[in-house]
Image (cartoon, rainbow, N blue to C red; front, side, top):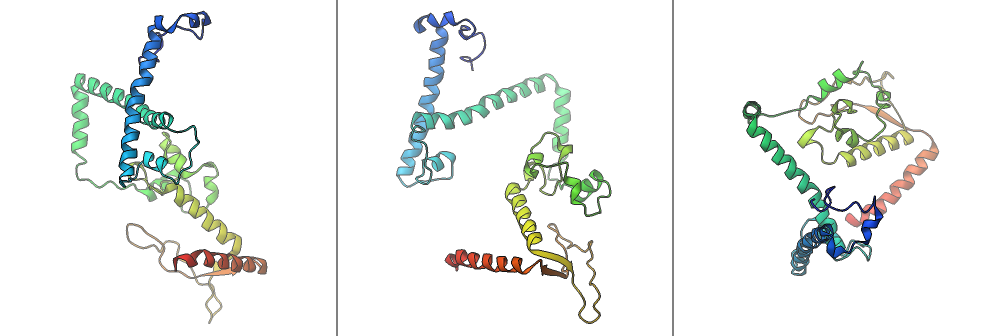
Length: 268
């Protein structure tokens, strides 16, 4: 940090004549070289330790293990010092900033005991508490006529749910179905894409309708409020009719089913 801080080196970019000064006469070049050499030695040793561990058959779940595995094909130039410094920089990027923020917090908390006591009281009061995000209440307070099935209400949120979930503007989230905070759904990206593909394929292939009572010919009602009474709540059993949209759709579905069977046969 000292090596790259403004004012610690000659402004050679603004005044190119300074580039003519020999490096041995410019202390900023010495600091810059040390700023490269010291962490390079540290990260290279880290990589060598991991390579030794792996050579002894001890392979673990880590980013360096993954990059060193034979399954990954790295650019030939991305080896040795470059690879070590890449991963070292990833860690350094978070270490320096986090440390500075923590020290700042300690400094201000020590000099503001009233703020410190207020925060401690709040921390002590939620002890052993179970925090549940009220999805139903949030969604019904966020949207007008929330009880109506209207997917168009999300047209103002064209991005993926994971992008809104990670935004600082929590009030602009599209929905809270995936949760929030530390307990947010770890598979949010996979879940959203899976749901989209499933619904899109169903709509492409079928027309969904009320099932019909065979005796009376009347439509069988579907109670939209009939849900299971448990933590992960899904609809209670209901009847619905799937009608292929055309013979062409039927033929395509049968072909796809045949291809899937071939793929899944390896796991039978």
